Length: 400
Image (cartoon, rainbow, N blue to C red):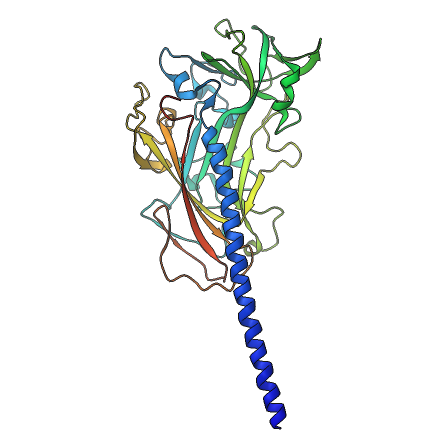
């Protein structure tokens, strides 16, 4: 009996040691995964956000200054009216190099209750509201309570334009030895921008072919193009270059494919890249899968704030001094104004990262905040922490 009792006590002690060691291991794993996820997520956001406003050798702000250049899109039916773009083509509104959407009830003074059952959002769950067509194009659907940001620019890679003939059709001759840099994200890109230090025009290629050892891009008034190149489109020889036109959306959604129960789904930071094949009549996401690109899993919530220049009137030159930080819903002069978004030079990011598996973590008793928004966290034993960073939009800063 004594031997049995001692053996039982020994076994119980070993079980306790094993349980404690396992909990410690799970906590360390949860912490490591959260740190790793935050690093990937922030690196991706920083890289793309810093490119916002890049439109050739000068930024979009320089192109929009009165008398300091030109900015055009063939996606408009009226070249001087950006509202003349079809609603289905809103991702091509390049007059917004950056545009945010604030999740309802997530301002810095609000409290957001994060349950173990995240809910898919609807277009009206953000301010300003997303258009129905734009929201429906995002697959998987964004979850409620996380902010959304759209980043548009020309690609960092470009190819030399060796010849340009306006009209309908217009033709752009490109150095074929440099063409490969434009296929970095797609083997057959269709959305481009041609730019020099004076002007820039975004368009969809009707077809791309090899002619006489050079790449020849043909552009017609068809597909996504509502108008054609006209006589005002002239580009300096030796300066003009061809770029991919990039339209990216960052948001939080369920991991694909979805599991039967919503609470079983992992949350993921997604990057939607809108594209179109040459001559195609509609936009799409990834040509192979039709869904957004998974950046990193474990991102449970994203909060965003935006720093604006002292001068928010687009008719006046900016000062280069950012003196206010606002949500997407409270941007000046209006949250839907492209002029107001053109004066955004900084973005603040708050990411709530959780471990992908239970980590024996106790529910936090200290109030958890993300850029001022108070977060009420679920008690599901997952390790959670908030990571924040400031991103200077280098192509939106005055003088660049």
